[in-house]
Image (cartoon, helix red, strand yellow):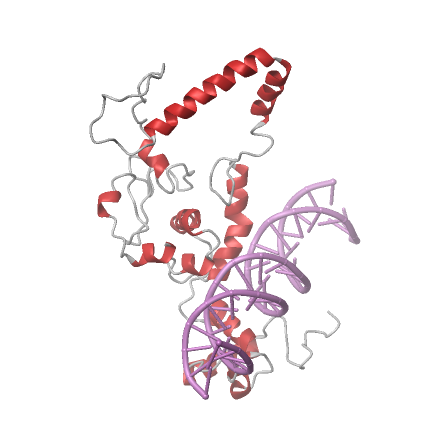
Length: 251
DNA sequence: AAGAGCGTCAACCGCAGGCGA
DNA sequence: ATCGCCTGCGGTTGACGCTCT
């Protein structure tokens, strides 16, 4: 940095000194922050307003909770990230005392890596389907290329399966039974045990919370925020209110 | 002992959106 | 309608400290 911590305008950049922190804290305690642009001059700081705002909101604010993230907090971040993606400020509103910057850093340096190590895609929160995990499929494809008869047989199976899926995914007709398509396939299998878990946002998610700590017996998680971020698997749906602020947020 | 490599996190940058003139 | 100002957000950078070789 050729400007030695000073911007073109001569304003200081880089780490804050304790003296600067004191000036900022004292000024805001007495006057509030008001206009961030005007603040540095009024507080006697040679910084831009943006730098002051950032220092205050991410570090000096009295309600900031510092220190390690608890397992509850980790789980909450993970679950909210599965719904909200990289909406750090939205996630931060559900973690009192934590800043978006802190959460973002924690995600990038800890949780993301952990998900990758566990074989999950950190963006989709689903098991990775990259080149390595799809290797068996690619090998099967190679087999098919080398065995055209097998390929035709599987193509036919795929076509029948496609018809079948199209049928079962249709909304149910007024009267069932009489007009079933003549498919040589068994009736649709009953939903599996985890059917509803898989159809909700985090049913597939790895649980980072130690067993028994915040998990209910069915393996679903419960946060202690008491709002819509809590859930108990499929049981949550009857209680879903679309006007809930959380769901408005993610809509 | 030293320096290369890596992890962490505070701080910066650029952009987008809200709002008032 | 549009322009400028202000704030907030998400991505990225860079300094620092720790670990490894």
